[in-house]
Image (cartoon, rainbow, N blue to C red; front, side):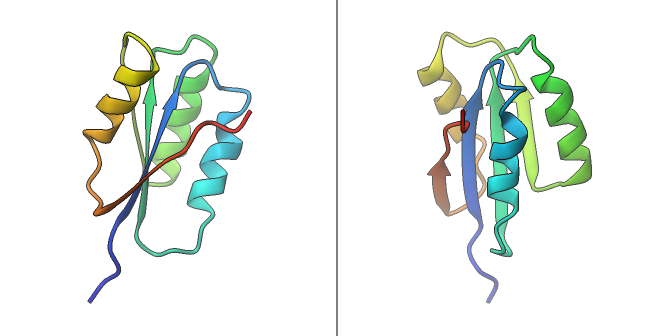
Amino acid sequence: MPPPLVSIVMPSLDHAKFISTSIDSVLGQDYPSLELIVGDGVSSDGTVNLLRERSQADPRLRWFSRKDCGPAEAINRTFSMVRGTIVGWLKVKI
């Protein structure tokens, strides 16, 4: 029986300077069944380009960039995308 999928959600807005470290902290885990979903609030600092590049290199990273009304909406939208049975929430490490 395969291990349960763990879904980590991470809201983000203009975190280009920090988001790679946060992505690395999740995807660097040795747990075999993991996904990271980043909900971006239409960043203007290069975050979207980083997410695009990183997701092409690692299919465990999924993301979207959509205007929202703040952190609560962003995290709720991101939670709606999880596929795992175990869910965690990670704040971008600043």
